[in-house]
Image (cartoon, rainbow over all chains, first blue to last red; front, side, top):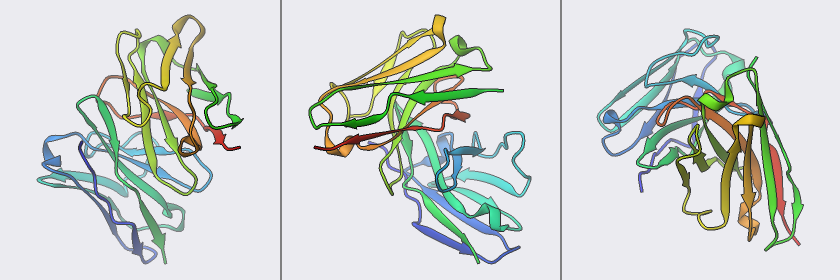
Length: 106
Length: 119
């Protein structure tokens, strides 16, 4: 079965940029989606189809996907960006999530 | 406004059954594929099941195959998950989430319903 690997945690200084990676075998040929989840809340879609932003998501959020790594980048990080982030792909007849990355804004 | 509202969670003994429901509103429910995703306490997201818009295709995670059944009633804008032979490891918050096509993003999620399997 297909696996997605994310770092357990990423820290970023307030106002700086953070990158969260999502590794998978040849993930570059798959379509990657990213979700943000704050404590006690449902996940929210922040990036879809590798790099597209849903309406209402700040331009500070961007995504890329190539080779064996997809990346979510958050520019000018704010305290409100502190959350868990999950990457997701479809593989055959399954939805696959990465293990999640806790983003801490210092 | 798109809304997905889950219900039916609760405490159940190991080996027992439970039926979850998800009510959709604010969008054309019959045009969307639907999913169940769960999250055990303190853990990550785990996909559970998928059903196509017309109920012609259903998929299940290996962890629930043969025990859970997904279904929908487009006339009632409703999605269901029948869970049988429940185990302690099924304890989780269960979310329903929609996707316009197979392979598309899960663009709206409900707030979830908690299922606790314990004696």
